[in-house]
Every structure is written in C-alpha cells, then in structure tokens.
Length: 265
Image (tube, rainbow, N blue to C red; front, side, top):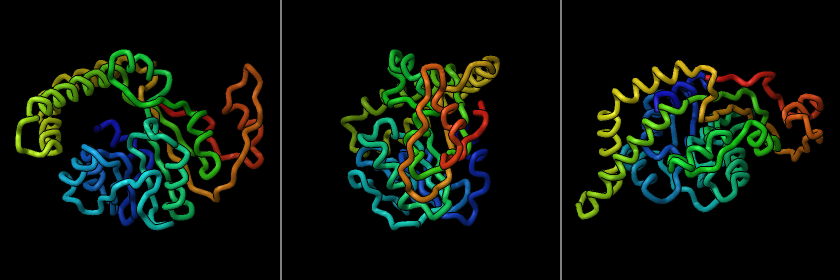
C-alpha cells in the first residue's frame, strides 16, 4: 500500500483543492487517499469492498457502481484514480468511458493494474485473479479519449508474496469469524490491520531484498493520462518486428502524446 501511494504521489503531485474520485479502493486505499489531501469521492462495486469502504470512511462521499455506470455528474472531477479491478471488469472500455464522462476537460486519469508479463506466475501461486496489462494494451484501451503521459512499474516479487501472505492470514480470520455477529466488513478491516502489523517486519525485509533486484521490472503497472475529446483513433499498423508503441511513435500526427521512455520504480 505504501508503494502504491508513493507512485500516486509521483504521478499526481499535490491534489489540494481538487475534486478527486477513486474507483476500486476497497476501503484502505480510499482512506489513505482522503488523508493525503483533496476532496475524495469513492466508488465501489457491491460486496465486501463496498462495505469496508463505508465502514472505514463513514459512508461519506461513497457511491455504489450501478452496472457499467458511475452515479455521478458529468465533468465533476479533476482526478480519477482506478485503484484496482480494471482487469476484472466485464467491459473495461465502458469503465474508461465513464471515467472520461465524469472528468473535467483536461482532467487526469491514473490507472493501476497488474503487469501482464508477471500475471501468469501470480496466477500459478494463487496470488492474482485479475487480467494483466501491458503499456500497449492500456494505450489501446485509453487512446480514444486520453493522451497517455507517463507509465511506471513498481512492486517486485518478494513484496507481492509478503502482501499475499498477509491477505491469506486475514482471510482465515474472516473464515473463522463466520459465526460472529460482527459484520464481515468490520472483521475484514480489523483482520487486515492486524495482518499488516503482524507481517510488518517480513514486509520490510522483503522490500529491502527486492531493492537488490533493481534490474527486475515491477509486478504492477501504473499510468497517468490526460483527458481530451473522445475521438476514435486507429493505431498505424506495425510489422511483425515492431512494437505497437513504436508504430505510434512513427505515426505521431493525430496520435496520443506518449512518453519516449517508460519509467521503472
């Protein structure tokens, strides 16, 4: 969570005085974002994540996703942050269009997703259920309504394992509390807080060891894009050797702004 918040801070800078929306924060990320600055609204699908969000944030400025639609006004936000869930969304393009609708002109969109190259090992270990993305696939998803500005990768293998173990421990606590009269969302929130405290030393050690793997790309991909008019665009065809991004660079006229290099963290 600290790594994620650090990447958001790098990509967005100060959000003081801005209207911001987070989607899929699941409670803890939403709470940390509200403490960071700006005026945040949080959207979540029905289920445990929504109940955790209501419990941690007191139900203030919390909305429930209604199918493919955000129950929010047009052009209401300066920043939209998709914390998680894009790869599990039945129609990611529909969610992107909703983000475009609720953003102000020239508003900023930040999307946080699993990095595709590392999703399969995480699937094998039972650590990741979402679909992974590459820079190219995110560009393809966003290109009609956004200019992709910066891409970063973060969170390496050992910290992913430490976080997964902490969540597995919290899930066991939730299972053992099925007969309790305490709402599951409350049990889950307290279990996660306890897990993070219990595993803090292991997480710290994992982060230090991960630092030695500085040549290993991160398991998470986070990007920032700027809103523009929604105009469907085609990417120039690439040959078998060319990367999609290279094709975009070769056909810059009418194409989205794209960073010359991809930053790694």
